[in-house]
Image 1: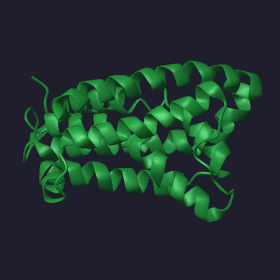
Image 2: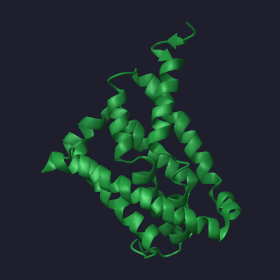
Image 3: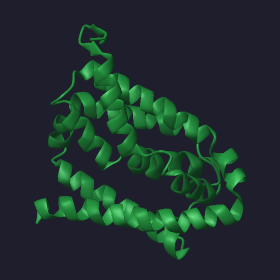
Image 4: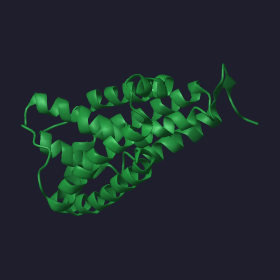
Length: 200
């Protein structure tokens, strides 16, 4: 069996955890949302967004449930809060209305790079829940490696956002925005429904 195990490090576990997180983060599928945020705020900061997402995800890896319990918030409340942000973003995309109002300045772009880009688009409730769940199956060092690999991918995609936007053009982006807006709306409703019933 070819598995590099060194102080708990296992390539197989890293690979499986990486694929799970890649599917949950879905940075490629989030491109229309990212471009929408960029258009609203004027620009985004790939390094800043990735850095904040890194802090959130690694923080949840080691302190997840403890952090939430300290502030008196459960994972279900956290997920519901994220679902509201996603819901209003989806409405913007589908209906062509403006809910998140941004001045196009450096302060606005930095803020948008954190909310809603770093959270909940990159490090959302689904990602948090997945990280906590993975702890039950894999060694923390392997989950950490999987997080780092995924965030490298996130950074590269964010850096290429302008090029992808130019490649698709206004027509292509308009179509993708509507399609992914519907998908995002469905995800937000599902996230609310699955976690809301635990609250009520």
